[in-house]
Length: 143
Figure 1 (tube, one colour):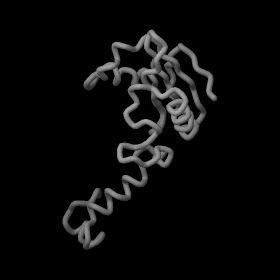
Figure 2 (cartoon, helix red, strand yellow):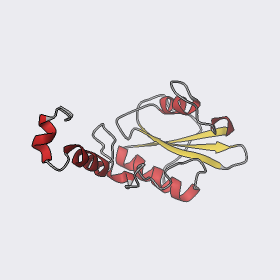
Figure 3 (spheres, helix red, strand yellow):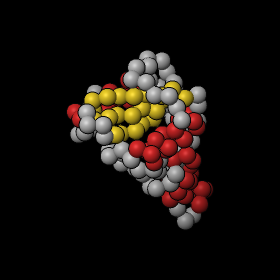
Figure 4 (cartoon, helix red, strand yellow):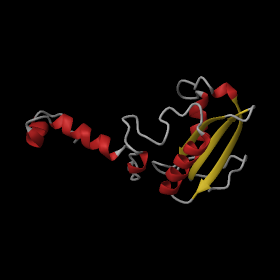
């Protein structure tokens, strides 16, 4: 288990953060660095609504705890363990699942962050019944 601190780091890295309400309820467990090194503050600003819509539960946040991890794989595993243990009330996808229900631990760590299974299914759907050649000829490819 990782060591959590209330000090928010300013360096790029792989972090798991926990957001708590004043009454001790775990509101959210999140992760940075899954798709490359990032700052925790960048992720928290996204929850606050700076650069997009705010999370409706953000005003309830009274305490933030952060743990630094050495790799993206370790961060993903720690996030999943914390979600299972703490059962945060605002984690939409529960036990580290991608939006389509695939385990998040199969997410690519090469920079895209997309679930490999979702990517395969998307590519198959785009190719259609005629296969890759037809997919490339119609100009619907990703190239």
